[in-house]
Length: 330
Image (tube, rainbow, N blue to C red; front, side, top):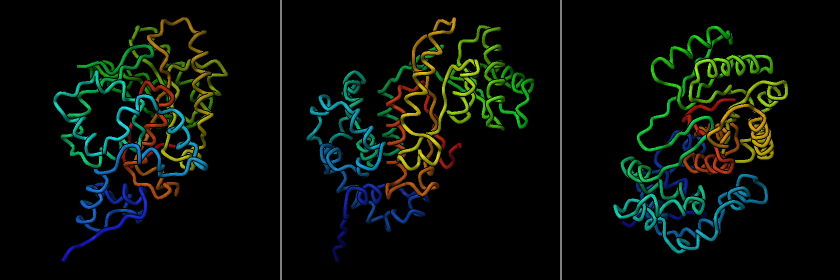
């Protein structure tokens, strides 16, 4: 007996093609059997990349993230792969003859939904192989992303935001050779006074020992900017982001806030007496499950929403993007 599966739209097709995830099951959009998952993957493999671009999973008229994605992708570069199917694109990425030099011009042509689609057809080994061909070099006080470099964040959190305790923990992490990516603290209290004190102390530590790294206090973006207005030194501006406008709203942010915050920090950097390696000043955190928790997933599966969150991050030239699967900060 032949079993047939029908998918009402791309959103359902994407969700059914996803690997098993408890979040998709909770949302009621996951494949109902392994057969249905395989059928969805096969149909997804035959989609052209152009079809994915032309049929947004979330209507751009009522979602700022979709508008950002469609307004910022490289349509000229996309023309070279427009008629390629998702399956063919997977084979191109995994081909031994395909190099990072060939992939680099396509970077801005691949919208998050295309990245999500091809990921659904890849194993973990495939993903490692494809990612190994790609270099994204970022620069703030130092440089990250070069081949052979393992960047590590030191996170000297303190339950009472005690400055002495934070500095001791940071110093210990540095002694282990960690902290080149960032010294970043999650404050126990999201207040301007606390954030200002932490940023000032970390800046003093970095300057005193001439440490080639950058610092950050992972409070809400509004709190960090208020601390900046009071004279606190901001290296990286942090914010949790998500893959839909509604989910970002649940974090208390808009895309305009991110744009304006980035410009304020860049201007702040121009006024500081520091030799900056580059102007990538944003630090983002994403996490599968955040949109579902906020009841803002819009029927889109978790992998695709995570790719869209990375699409948000990419638009603001981040220095770091940190993925926290299963949990998202405030």
